Image 1 (cartoon, rainbow, N blue to C red):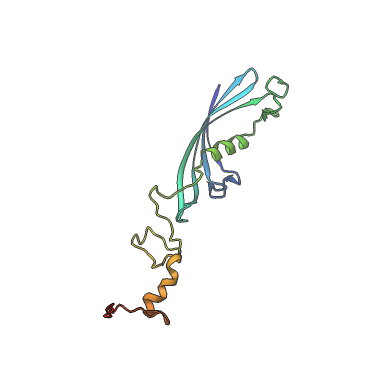
Image 2 (tube, one colour):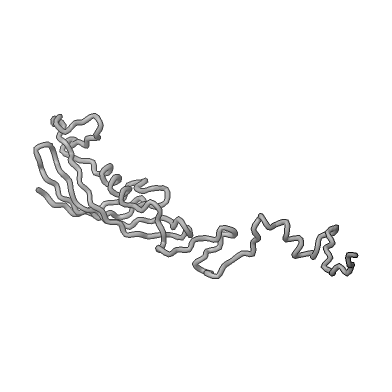
Length: 173
């Protein structure tokens, strides 16, 4: 068994469209490499800072990311670990490629919808104003079902619809 602690630069495309670890950013690895009958078992943890944008207000988000990883890298001559439905990682020329394992661990640990804070109000749907800066932000909008009545309130009574409220003084005989 061998323990390894390293800081490595992040490869390109380590994340999603919304959030990820920028290319070249430091990833701290604390790994344990164990020789087992089938190959080399790599287990340990990684930590880095993911950068993206809040899905509500589009401000920059920096999230500390920490996750565990474990992967078996099979020796080339080992056919026991092969399965048609499972991807088998291999030891090649006494080297292992950790990039796919790191990518899988990081992408699964990233939030699906990152937010800058849990109570982020987001943006105004009418004008795009940042609601965190102005919590009292509102717009005067009328319900479209009442739009025909807007003219009555603004102009008074529409023409041709005179309504009288005078009492009828005629008596029936």
